[in-house]
Length: 188
Image 1 (cartoon, rainbow, N blue to C red):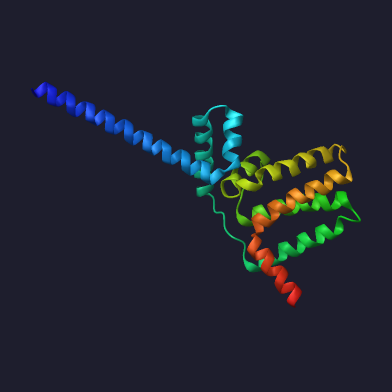
Image 2 (image 1 turned 90 degrees about the horizontal axis):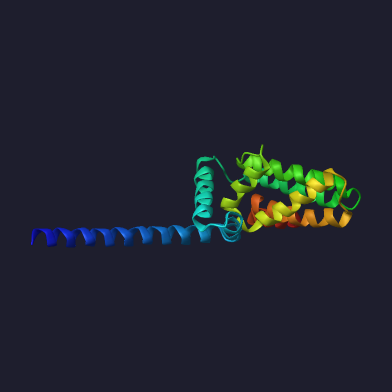
């Protein structure tokens, strides 16, 4: 009788343990999928393995949590938004120069916010934690920047890259701050 009770308790503990592990895995999966959105799908596609992709994304999340990423001050936001506006207006006369300046400005925003910027792949991985919806746009802009360095882009390519960078810039500066600044500029 003792043995039967022991076996029954052991089986119950195993079932509860398996159910708990399943529940924790399901919550982790849902959390990562919700947080990373399209970046989650990209990681799964690239690794070919959900567990490996989730491990990579969880590592990114832990890494960024340790960084000292901060919001921009109102003054920083205003200064950077004004700089972006100047870059955009420069595009008509000097598309290549404007694009190079836009690329530099994206890096400045990231540095000011506290993101490390020395390695581009790490940079895009870091921003994927907080801005997963614009990562592919950043990659597209960066691909054009790489081709631009080789002289392999048209003005239309540069225009597309500026559109992609603007999406990232708006997210990094904060759409609300940029819109508020624009309203203040028009009012004043």
